[in-house]
Length: 177
Image (cartoon, rainbow, N blue to C red; front, side, top):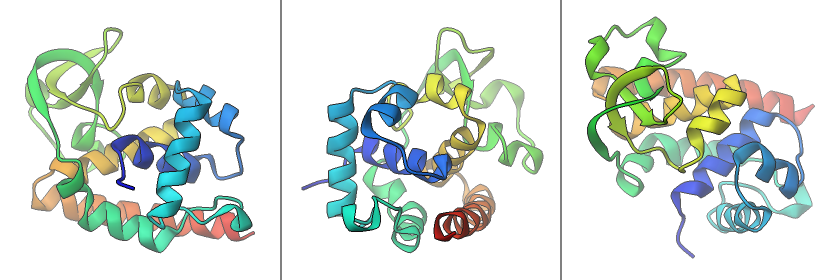
C-alpha cells in the first residue's frame, strides 16, 4: 500500500488537533469525505506514521518526523507553477516568515481564489489545504513547515527541521498526558 500526499495531510491534522477526532470531524475540518480520511488513516497506519486503533490512532512521532525530514521531498516533491493569487506557504508563512526574509513577489503560495497574496504557485499536499489551513493556525504552520522541507533551500530546510522537531516533541507530550 503506497502513501498518498493526503495521508501526510491527514496525519499532520491529527498532530495539530492534539486530541482524538472522529473520521467525520476530521473530514469536516479538512474538507474531505469521511471515506477519504479513513483510507488516509489506514495507509498512514500501514506505513507506521500513525499507531493502530489499539493506541487510538495516535501519531508515531518518531516515524512521522523521520519521514517528513528525510522522505517527504522525494515522495511528494514540490510542484511549482506560474504567478497566481493564493495563500503563502513554506518560508513565506508562519513560523518561518519571522526568520527568513524573502522577495515579496517570488513567495510560494497555494493557489486559492480568495488568497490575499500573489506569488509562485506551489501545489499543496491536498487541494483543500488553503481552506483548512486558514481555519486552523497550528495546522497551517505544520503544512508550511512540510512545504519548506519539500522544496526549501538548505538554510530553510534546517530551520524548518528544528521548528518541526520542537513542535512534534511538544505535541507528543500533549498526547502522552
